[in-house]
Image 1 (cartoon, rainbow, N blue to C red):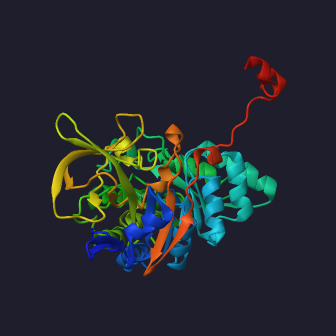
Image 2 (image 1 turned 120 degrees about the vertical axis):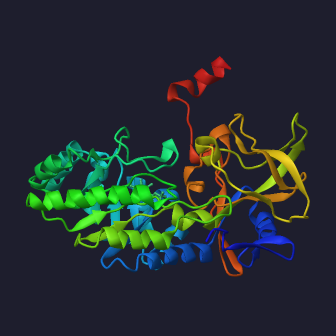
Image 3 (image 1 turned 90 degrees about the horizontal axis):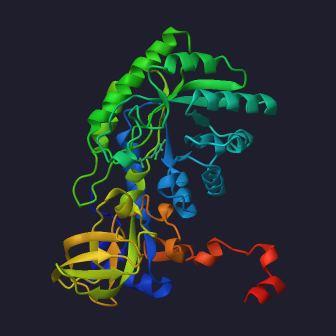
Length: 428
Ligand SMILES: *Cc1c(COP(=O)(O)O)cnc(C)c1O
């Protein structure tokens, strides 16, 4: 599965399910993220179905991929919990009605306040990234009279074969404890009053297309689980992280059925509950960024199509050289070779270089595809631009789920009080 199941051209106009994107642009304006509920549900079910051979499991959507309330709500209905990396994401997940026990709290820089918040609300697992974090969590838990359910994140030193900026499982990244150090650290942490250490966690990176690196990592984790048990540790949970990739060029996504079969095979004798933390795989194809062409400007090699969405709205191309398909909302069959660029004052603010695209002109609507994951969630108000609106479509209906927010409303600003009033008047 690759094409966004929620988006298709009907009657000459690109629709999200039953709703014309031209209608959404007219009502909500641009740039706007548009999500298909059907596409989200389809991916969520595909992932769950693929894991049918795994008997004991819990699914936790990686919230950083798309923390919108409507998306989290839909995934809760689909039986997903959440993998979070901040107190803010914890709040978002609880607001979406997910149970705290269905939360796994990951992240290399949790603050003591966030750890206490996690214990207060009763999250399912806190994935420890270091021995010291475990020590601090244990102390907080003792003070609160709780036992903190925790897993130790292990860095298996396996290269995920993906972009360097989304690789997390090699020994030179900041994530987890080195697998060689894990047994001693585990023993030490398991003996801390206040910690209920229940197993290990691993996540080697994102946008992983081939199963081999994941299998290599999981095999190492299996050996570690056996070694820990041999040392007398009770292991009831292993968190296998996320990372399954999607094809951004209309080809085949990571083979999720093969992934499920591999997991079942590798973990057959582990006798644990497995946790999964998919993000991109669930949400990427379920969203487009709806944009309007501002200008078509002649260039040396080919034209620049200047659109009203920029790198502040969608950072992935600037950050990871990521490819996203670009398509006209009302394609006329003609094509052109162009650079597609945003309005932001950075040369990296581009979405396509000298690419054959649908022919578009000034004022036309277009979409950047496959932006349901790591799209709106990474947006900023750089250049004092507004944060794009978000819309959810289901069948023939659509709703604004996040309003467009002006930069001034995101970051209310004041002058130092001693610059105000008379003093300011004099300076002027
Ligand atoms: C980002 C992240 C995920 C999700 O990764 P995807 O590639 O989006 O599936 C899962 N677990 C952890 C710990 C993460 O940091």
